[in-house]
Amino acid sequence: MTNVRAQAAYQHATAAFRNPTLDLLHGRYAPFVVASLSLLFSADRTAVAVADAHVEVAEIIDELRTAGYDDLDPGLPAGSGREICRYWVRVGWLVPQIEDTVEVYRLSAQAVGALEIAGRAGGGRVSRSRVRTLLDSVDQLALSAETDPDRRLARLVAQRTEIDAEIERLHAGEIDETDDELLLEEAENVLHLARELPADFSRVAESINAMQRDVVADLRRDVRPPGEVLREYLHRGQHVMQATPEGRAFAGALRLIGDPEHIESLTDQVHTLLARPFARLLNGAQREELSAIAKRVEQGVQEVLTAQRRASHVITAQVRTHDPARDREVDDLLRGVMSGLQSWMQVSRPTDRVTPLGHFPTAHIRHLRQTLSDPRPPQAPAPLVHADDVLNPQSALGTDSREWGGPHYRELEAHVATLGDDFDLGDAFTTSDTRRPVDLLGLLEIVHGNGMTERDEITVVTAERPDGTTRKFAFVGVQATASPDEHSGAPVTGAAAPEIVIPHPTKDASDA
Image (cartoon, rainbow, N blue to C red):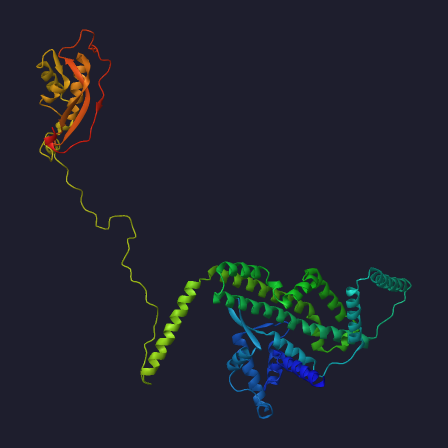
């Protein structure tokens, strides 16, 4: 049993020392790191521009080297201020960020915790204030965990009795003055609790950032169906504060300290305390730290909320713009580049040079038309046509353009006059000199005015156009008279002109 307990205790201690905060404090140059970061960052300066940090770290290390601390154990790190800060970024002391297009450094949660541990090392003491804080916390925990209504009611009645007794003493003018030493202990306990808040806020923000990186990495792996990935990650992006234990704890604390009225009330209370006589017992650093409590709380809340908004924006943007096909194409391209580089390294010599690719090749497109106007230069208008050319009756086909006009009534009437008293309409059209389709209609109009009688048979005639093409027409047989009737040109028997049916046209003149 003893061996098992020893192994468990050792494993627990080993896991504790793997904590990043303790790992940073056990570094070789940890004293220099803690001293430099405590000078760079403060409650009023939570972010430092990268260029300013490099210059200030260089000045600190130059001052310490001039004082001879480089020869003492553990010594000072080598390199410039920029190299030292970049190393702190790699090991996790600093976190680079972009704020208003400027790159800045912020303390990581591990660095804040390390500075807090180093700040209170050797200065802690058991005080009445800390013991009372512990007892009040245990009492509040017991009251919250109590499920018996009678016991909870008894506790509340006892508290009310104590409060009523205190009110009666105040009405009677009895005020118990608290010793300044005890008030100093209370202030130191408040400062001790306040030093832990920045590390807590930083851990919440970094846990949100870590969840954001995990989400983006899982999305890029593309190992699950896109629909499932979209649903899960959009949900996590909207509820990012509830995705980590630190985030859930902060969400509960935010209900207490997130109200601006609470922050203002805290500021007023701190200013009132600093005006009390016991505040003279605090040194300058403690008074400055006490006055900055409200500001620290406000900055910590703002840091977490900023990390939450950034994570939601990054996850949503990644989900919307994620293209697995494009990612695979880029991966294939990079693998091809690496394979080609390895092949080239096997056959190349140390003196061989490779011309770098200045830019990616682009497709060359010829000049595209940008306007709707004619690109040719303007020319003089065409010359006017003479009137004789316009009135020339001969067309390009060599025929009279009037041949394409209406019926030739004079020729048709003269032809009808030569046919006798009675004649067949089809025979009259076939023997006519003008056998255009429009002349058939003109002939029908003439015999309709003179008088006509319809028969039962169907008559088919072939008309010929001026260009030589033919077309057949079918209509009810008509027996016509050559002279008009005495009744004002009305038809004798037929009530209306016969219907003409147009079959499919033919282009061969032999069909006539």
